Image (cartoon, rainbow, N blue to C red; front, top):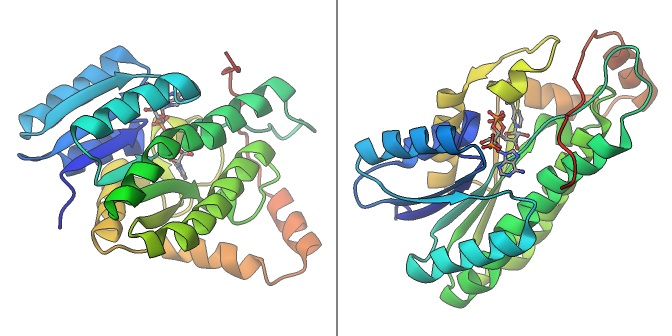
Length: 262
Ligand SMILES: NC(=O)c1ccc[n+]([C@@H]2O[C@H](COP(=O)([O-])OP(=O)(O)OC[C@H]3O[C@@H](n4cnc5c(N)ncnc54)[C@H](OP(=O)(O)O)[C@@H]3O)[C@@H](O)[C@H]2O)c1
């Protein structure tokens, strides 16, 4: 059955915004989380125009207590059928940098890993009690293999991939479906901040369509684009230093995030 009560984090921009609009329809309640009030309000207005009921959570996903309070209250009112942990930032290295700023590393782990836990932890027990629900985690091809230009980003995504796999084995026998989204390059503000080759880049609308289709079909792992995914998987079968050398040849600049642990 199509989900009627859906939570999306990072709904104020990019993939999260496109997902919110893809799911917006009459009889659907969308709980949307983000920090930027203006952008979040604009997404809410567009989703309302499509007939959806909107609940706005102007929250920082790193705030465990506020997230638990708001998500639990929404779940009590409109039990979630689908929760999409999408909010994320990026950080990395320029061609001349050797190491990431420790503050940026902690900021990205706080958002891209702890923020994901803060999103799903409040709903796991209620979904298990109802014996239904779906959890979706936005991972990345960077989570399949550490990228020399984005160590902490790759580490956070790899952790999300492992966490998703573990949850899937534990929760699916209890009636809660779990999906991992392994995304390649998607044209969004996050991706625009990165300078480098972006093979097979998709629009945010196309990415949201593929994610929604995969979730509708209950896929355990949703990957796009396939050629990049296969290349990343294949690379794992080659000697690691050979892949290091090949990746080192690409000129990539991933600016350090200015976000810091509050
Ligand atoms: N774009 C790509 O090529 C690509 C590829 C693979 C995976 N991904 C993943 O896709 C997800 C979405 O990224 P995107 O490309 O759509 O980026 P985006 O356009 O920059 O959107 C990021 C969203 O995350 C929210 N966010 C960031 N930090 C937050 C915080 N502390 N609390 C609450 N919300 C926060 C932002 O909200 P505010 O601005 O309102 O804070 C925004 O809505 C991320 O997990 C990213 O790692 C993206």
